Length: 409
Image (cartoon, rainbow, N blue to C red; front, side, top):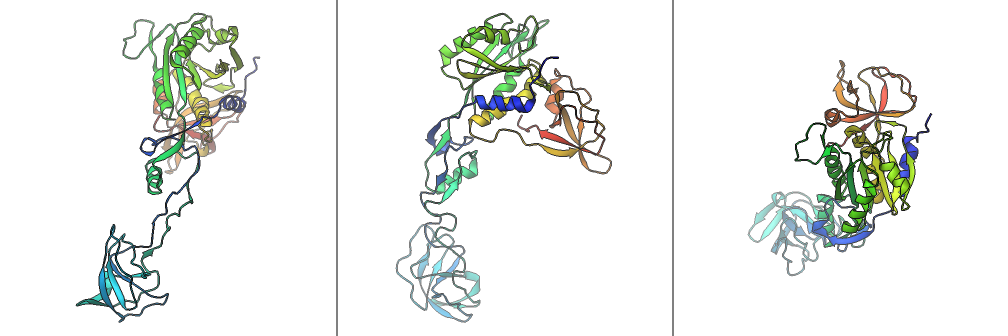
């Protein structure tokens, strides 16, 4: 019986092949969706001074509570974006609006609805405590304080925070450059009507968009025929035209049939080295992990579900490793909606959907057929049920480990 590499060992080997993306500095406005390469600190504090949190009157309490009935002379006005002139003295107040810097000497705010106004003065109708309705300098963050950590996937909130902290440029991980290609005489490109015996190359469509969502730049080397040396010829031409790749992913031609040449091409090339070939998983058994000219190479099966599942389990996590992120997708336990039989020696990734049982409990239900050519089945799956090698039969209601398929895929 052929030795098959366990999934966990295969993942460890593949991830160890990946280097780390170097850093680069780009404009903050261009950094959405990128991975922060370094911890960053605030260049300026926020707020930059004590400011008013409400519309009202700035007062001086001298750290003593002011009782209702206390009167103040109103000496001026402070608005956001305008610095009030002068210093408040005892018995003085200044009209102030939300976001305005407190005038010098002020340390509390009386709400406008909590005072009685007379000509040129106010009388407190509610007591005022020191610091009341004041946002102190650095309430959000101070200069030099850490605000974002390396490894953060930069979204709108992160960019807004970085900009408020004074940043106009950010250090990010370089985008991975991934070369993709597909092997098979039967394949035609999207947009070309397939003739008898031909098939549209959906694998390249999946890989392109799945990898782009990880932040990768894609170089599509197209379709290669089922003949010896086609792989190496395509890779050499692609390298000459586009330069360095960080990863190469090929679909199809990874099996052991007479028309499958990917493994033999790599074995015959002095610049290539195969780490392992064939994994104890279903779907996706004939996966090749290798290097070519010191570039990590993954040869995925050609069946679309096999290619898709292998992408979720190996390819996309490998890109996360390259970007310095945690690699493996999260798994959790969910109850089954129906019974499942025992498993054989291969780890199974079973396409499934969420359903509610007769008690209203959210459960997972596998599709009836799990053929690796059924792309519609894979498209409508919401999760994969993980069945370890030799897992025992499971009854409806019992928990099984599951891995969600991202809705974006």
